[in-house]
Length: 358
Image 1: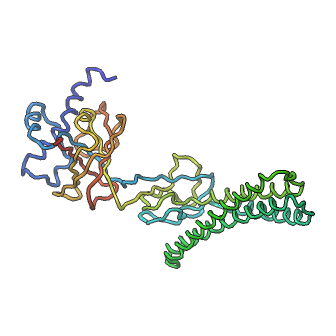
Image 2: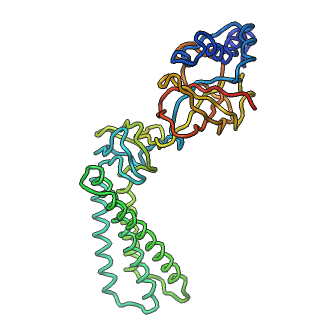
Image 3: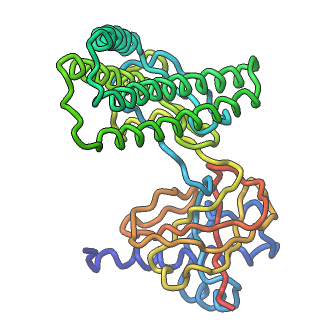
């Protein structure tokens, strides 16, 4: 709780929005490069209130440009050492494309051993005389296992084609074919699993023999080994641009959301995340019109609309390069959608001026 000793600081912070817009109308009367929030200073209350009544906006807030789709943070799903980073910052990546490969020597050896064991168990089972009542179920089991292998192979085929396309030795057409192959393999697997469930539900099906149970266990080990190998592949969960890439070859990583290995965002459409002073939250609502300006494009204005407002107040994240916020003031995060194509890029500072309701 803030005590009365903080009131002078609160009074100064309360005047920030007013002081901002006063600066806009001062001097040459135009919004030039020097009229960013970064250079605004606090002013006295009486003249600020008088001038603010004539201004077309009711509040101002500093912010940053970010991808409209947000930023997707990618982390590892397995403890391991980074063997290879296959992309760089600013690279365009596709959904499912390999970003980082962890050391997979142990995982590959485990998969090979599991597959060898499963093949051996299958030969033993096939040499056993077949109970006619279990024939359909056995065929269905084999079909599911085969379809699972086809999905795994199709995933690695897509991985290869995506990397080949990036290096220039492949084509987008081959990537599209690989995606179609993977989609088809997944559809076949779903069909075979349905057939297996139907065969399993038939009445009077004898319990599996000892050799059949051994094969089922071996195939389960194959599935576990494949899942482990897949976790050594850190893939792009969405299409977009690599905005940050902290991952470095040779580093150890752990499956923790705090250890971000890559950040991806869609750069094609951007928005503004602004921080509205707590004293101004009653002046702005979803649907409010906004003018956005940036020092990177002096003299230009970009129109926007408030799309979202955070449900709670929070500590400011966007720092002002000039005047400082009082430490006891919190802000409400406001998301602003921009109209049309804009030259602004993620990471840029931007200042938002919220218009009066018409």
